[in-house]
Length: 200
Image (cartoon, rainbow, N blue to C red):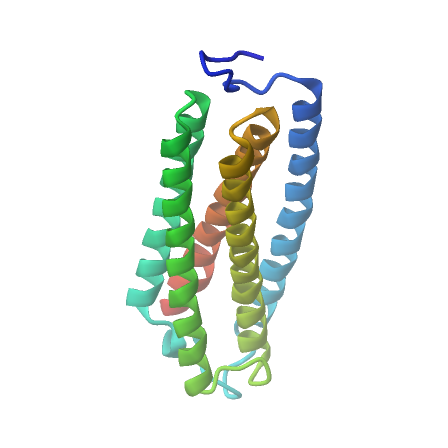
């Protein structure tokens, strides 16, 4: 493994790290199947709520969705900067960018909570129709993944602060970045095929 002058890992070439990353890709494959199932259910029920509840065009608001998209896509950029800082051994910069990433993620969740409250007040709940049930389940599942990512990111920051940047914490940070990028990709699908399509 390549090290800099402070013995910080810059590459991930050990067999253990390769196996960890491979295992995580397998995990992401299962997550992709989960979201594929949610999207399929949504598309089945999206037109079956007419008459029994509000449609997408009635409940979707563009400004909150654009804010959510901006926050999450920006966080994808900052987690990339964190990984770059980690690779060149700049621990403080890495932690700083990770903190910014998590703050952006928390901002995304705040807007999503506002959205759920808005849905509730206009009568779009899990019991309203098949459309609203699958919509809220899909959005809620993604939001739960973001919440899990926030706690995971905090744990990594604490580990780096306590034990420094070593092969183990570097590998965890890199895997976390893959997870966070995955959440951003899923959001692009949600933004494109649920929100934009629903507003048309």
